Amino acid sequence: MRRRARIPKPCLARLPVYYRRVLRALEEGKKVISSQELGQAAGVPAAQVRKDLSHIGELGRAGIGYETQMLAATLQEFLGLTNDKEAIIVGAGNLGRALAAYPGFERYGLRIVALFDHNPNKIGTTIAGKKVYPLEKMEELVRQWNVQIGILTVPSSQAQAVADLMVQAGIEVIWNFAPFCLQVPPHVLVENEDLAARLATISYHIARRRALSQLSGVQSSD
Amino acid sequence: MRRRARIPKPCLARLPVYYRRVLRALEEGKKVISSQELGQAAGVPAAQVRKDLSHIGELGRAGIGYETQMLAATLQEFLGLTNDKEAIIVGAGNLGRALAAYPGFERYGLRIVALFDHNPNKIGTTIAGKKVYPLEKMEELVRQWNVQIGILTVPSSQAQAVADLMVQAGIEVIWNFAPFCLQVPPHVLVENEDLAARLATISYHIARRRALSQLSGVQSSD
DNA sequence: TAGATTGTTAATCGATTAACAATC
DNA sequence: TAGATTGTTAATCGATTAACAATC
Image (tube, rainbow over all chains, first blue to last red; front, side, top):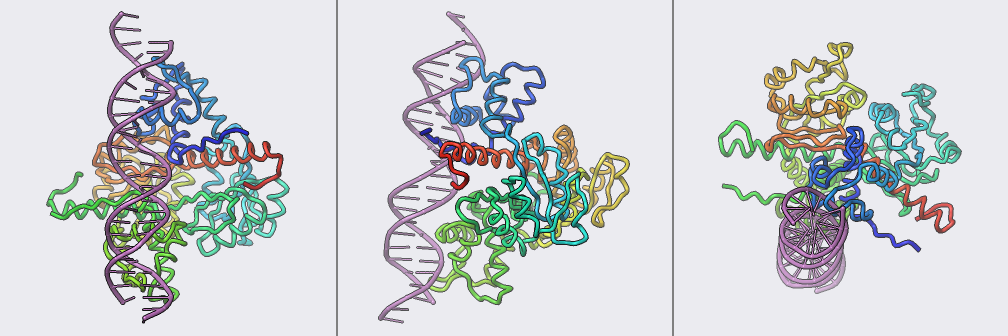
């Protein structure tokens, strides 16, 4: 029985950034990279990088740094980027279409196999080489193709209904772009990408700045 | 001199979710809403909600809950959603176009006034009613329209160069969709929306599940 | 050797949760 | 009054940072 040293969430979010940095170092022909350099790429101190990587194992060598080839391979393996992962996109609106055409996903092992929508005008069309199917076909095709990931890009009003369909079809992870908190059974993982909420926090920062510059009477700056 | 009781980052990220929930309650004609209900919408316990809202002020009434009308107005004001905020999108690719057409932004006070690209085929076209300009025009137009927000949707390789342009033009906040850690002066705020990194963490969870189900020999589940 | 850099330990910092008196 | 629900305090939990012996 393997000990699961469950990894801190913020750390997990930084690993892909280190991964990209070490890929770049590899391309540049560098044999080693330091926690310092990795930290710069992620905007965190070197100590944070060493702490993060120590969750995976003893990957570096004191006095030298991290061997790029090995670190890249280890992170790739650890993050499961080598495995193929099938995904569907439900909601063939602007966002769904943009994600279907996003070139960066394939490099991470994500294969978007189909889109789904209930708009008859969209059904049967092709987006970035992927066909758009009616929602009714979802369960059948998800099971047939062994799809694990559901990318949800429908309006909030339909989000929960679509999530229910996904769960019923056996999808394991829902990447939710709808501004809505989905209710799902505990074995299903939801990752929220709430752009509207993100915008609201940006709005907050701008408002604070305005208030500050009003107060101090200056034009700009901190 | 007003005391700045700087608000915890995770709390700030939850406020928009409460805001949306209270809007819904308003639409349903409810006069009050409890921390319990707000918490459900955000997937956090009621105590967390009360703690979060207490950062803004004493907004509720013991034994009753939060008055919807007042809470909605307070959150809207606090998050600065009432102010108009001008934004540009740089990078008229799939993602940029999708964001330009995203209907949810206007409700939060965001006005996307233009797109920029260096592809001559795109320049002069119109996306969701907004014109696409050449990058060379950016500084001039940003200053003319008093744009504060730059939405960056170019490939990583051009991200830093575009960010430099934005900073030079006087943009205050960069909403960065490129998988790249931008270097900017301290008075400029960068909000990263790193979809590729997000995907990598999803990939990790799927890989763990596979390992688990392999170990235990079962087909699915936790 | 001297200089660089790791992994880990301990100290600090910050956020979440539980509990409860105060209030309606 | 009894039941509901707040705001706040204290306890817990988790993540970041600093420091340093160990290593190359």
